[in-house]
Image (cartoon, rainbow, N blue to C red; front, side, top):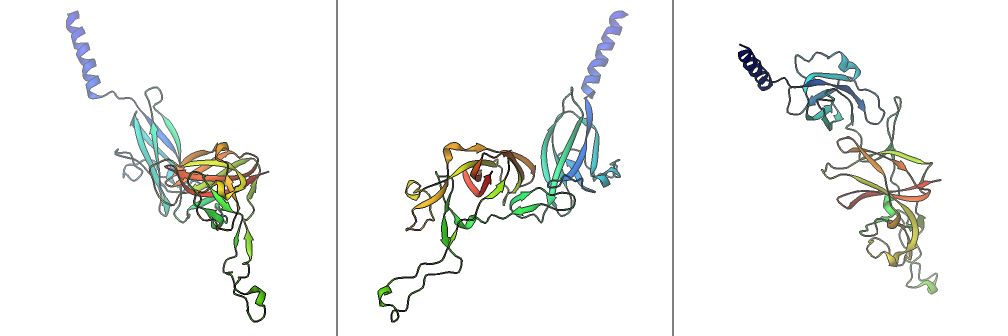
Length: 288
């Protein structure tokens, strides 16, 4: 009799395992604006290739969505891709994981307005949106390979060209051109200490974004022949000291949007954003 009960009990345990006593938990959190950190009303959240979505008719927490909050219950432990979006916003995609030891998870997801153009931005607040940092140095930049980055120290003013002198009035200047008015490289953007900005990439790519800062040093152009864009009469340029680069922290926020943080070294710096070893753009900063 005892053997029969034991066999029956064993069979029951096996049946329970086969029919699924899978560990489950709750995944909850909120959706915020990437630039301000403010929760966004009525976002849409879903977990890829699962039944979990705030658009489901039986979703219980629709009132909480007004505060940007969501909750999915009885989620089997495992690895998931969770997505968040909203009308006129760029969505985010994040990988999340739960385990039997930690079946519950709280997350913050970030999205941002689809009106944000590519470029570098300062964080915003609840009253003011993000402020774009104008890349006024891009006109002075040259295309470099091994040298990372190079800037002209001066260049002709926009719309100003060389003029042929009046040969009748000044025979000594015959065959020569008047020098064009020159504009110096704009001064670097000054910050103090820690860098905290957002970078909106122009296109979607799968390879990671890399952000590094290099001391900006004035050097002979002849030592940087890989930089194309200097005039033949130029002797000096501003270059990145590639032997003294400092990595900055890149944090994914949403599709094509990254938060860039780090302690910027003292002095003038050239900040490089790159992917697959190719420079996307550079900025000129100074930490005083």
